[in-house]
Image (cartoon, rainbow, N blue to C red):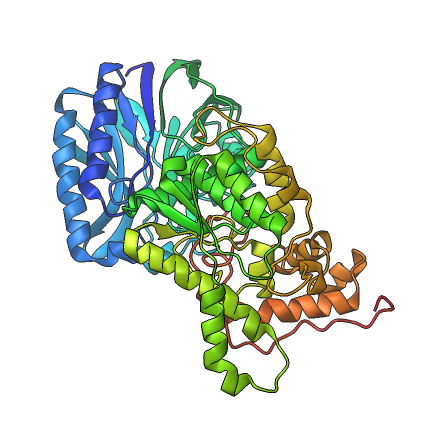
Length: 557
């Protein structure tokens, strides 16, 4: 029995469905592990098909192709390291999320995921069959447990493996980013490790997949629950940890320890990774967006330049008679700082044409949001025409506060392929703008101090009518966002919001706006999940919904 193991953790960025390309990434990692003298290479959860593949794994041809490629890959292990290889696995007409153990040129062991997450962004119970409690595998005389992701978060699997004599845990993961990810992982998994007295090698996927971003941030823990290895956040990474057995315990003797990211930098990089991978993995060469001179479009443009480079970002200002000279100046100044293409296309001719067309029907009626929305939809028409003609993907710019209360125009400023701000409240948009102006990490592609200060400090406005400000229609954003966090992220009772000092009038109105805007959000483009509960995969409210949490009467009217 060996008393020394070298375990290679390959934190890689797959593309869902790109089986051959994903295998090539795995082969490159395997050759590196082989050259480094590793005993075992560990790949992330469902790596060959990408995670989450959703209903793609219900396609028999895809599952069969995964199996064939896995069998071919196993042949590489005849003269090299063993591999922990995860994939959708069909057995006895049942589909499992399975970890294969490959060695000596073949697949020697199959371990099936026992706990299938069915909450939040996960719905594995819909597509996979639950596996039995897994037994350890034996490699070079060492008993190794292979819990797959959720198996470490729930009770039963780790303790069962310990009872069966496991000496070390190796876990492939597909754990998406949210602000609480690092603290949740270290607390939950550290408790399992400490309770069972088994060290853990945790290998996570990195990259963007539609609304989800995987941060990587792979790590290893000692049997006491201390972090002994950590890989980088939001980028592919690789490391070989060296473990030796001392007094019946496996101890990490060598591994790198990187600083893993939290706070505003983590939020920023998550958005850049999600946007960049969405654009690149879907084959777009460029993005286009409407540049209004406001904070949201400036932030969307900055995210895009940081993720893709200035030469792949096209900003278009589309002024009307309501657009202030300051907005025109600010839009141009921001685009110039970013170094991206910037054009001005006045949309007055389009608005005049629509007004002329509708004049017989609108005659005698006071102007309303109908006329305001014509402006927004005219801009969408221009941007989509440019997108269709020249090929760039249209990026939308609405923040979570606006999306929550419906302060956005369907088929207008909501029009596009992806929204990097979708899960950022307005107050978070301002905070991140300040952070980005003060920080310029080396691997971001944008410049220093990209956002003109006046864009950050001026009162937000849609500029669809004279002297319009967001505060005309909504509470101040610090008030609005606190109410929305309570209603969305916390699902708290309205009494709790009143206890925070909010008025009955504000709480009642914002709750109503939140519910009636559901039909808009269902038609909105995807965007990066940042917080604990995003619109889309996390929060699935019915569109037709007459329920309202009763708001008690108070004196703050």
